[in-house]
Each structure stands twice: as C-alpha cells, then as structure tokens.
Image 1 (spheres, one colour):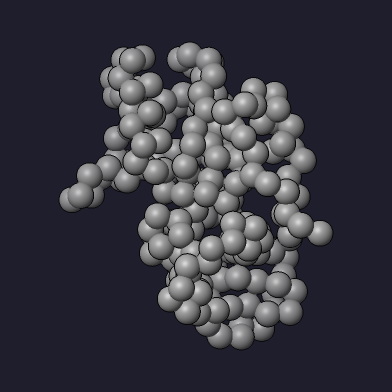
Image 2 (cartoon, rainbow, N blue to C red):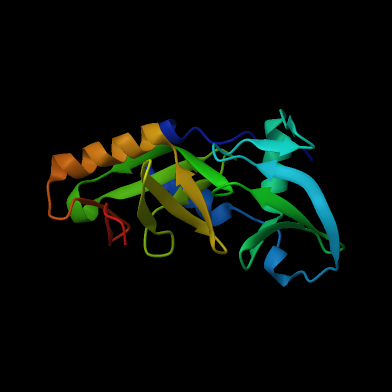
Length: 186
C-alpha cells in the first residue's frame, strides 16, 4: 500500500493537526528485539537528507517509510524490523523541522511542525523545544519521539525568533501546548 502524501501544514488548523496526530500509526519498534545484523550503509545528513552507499535517496516515500522504523539505541541509531537491526549514521539529528504553524498568542500559543519526512509534531510538554548555542550559532531542536529530535531548519528558527521577539519576555522564548521554551541554551 503506498504511503500517503505529506500533509499541507499551512492549510490545516490546530484541530485538524491534532486529529492527524491522534490517527498516526507507527510500527512498535520499541517492542522489537531482533539480532543486530550490521550496517545499513545509510546516512542521514545534517540537513535531513538520506543517503545509501553515498547516493541520495530521491524517493520521498522511501525516506518516509525508513523513518517509521528508525529507533535510537543509546547514543546510536538503528533501522529495526521484527527480524533485523541495522546501524544508520546520523550526522546531527535524524529529522529536520522544515515548516511551522503558529496559532494563538502568549501562553495560549500552539506550535505545530512539519518534518522533512512529512510527519507532524506539536510542540508541548511531550515534545519540547530546546536551544543549543555552538560556535557557529544557535541550534534549535524539537523532540520527535523515543529520544529522537528534529533540527529546526534555519528559516523556521527565524520565524520562531520573530515570534519570541514580538511577544517580548525575559528570557525570550516560546509558549506551546501550555509549556514555555526559553530560547537560551540550557
């Protein structure tokens, strides 16, 4: 059965986003304990691009499919099925948050993100935003699932920064789902 196309976040309201999140079904990878079989020869680049044996995986549906069987095991990442487990190299974060939708203001604000895989993630207590300061600037992350995060794409980060600046506050930060996320390194 073909994978459905990714949702159009801009066209959805928060009720539709909440419904899509509630209907999302992912394989129970955390319940599978197969034997480690080696290296998948796959890599997820810092920008969220997927590669196999050095060549980009150009089919978005294939990337979406692989992303559903991705799991974090300690400090490493694996692709897992009931029968096998293969290592996958992740340069930074396994996902990229490429679009944001904001509704409401201040404490009543809700932020929803579309990932490079087409998945939707609503920021809140279960899916926190965090900000790291590095030599090359800020690195914002969104918790996705199972200890895995999405690196927030630079244009999306600029949208978030503008929201925080427009609302003021000390420290600057963002509310979503009733939780406050300061835009300072923890």
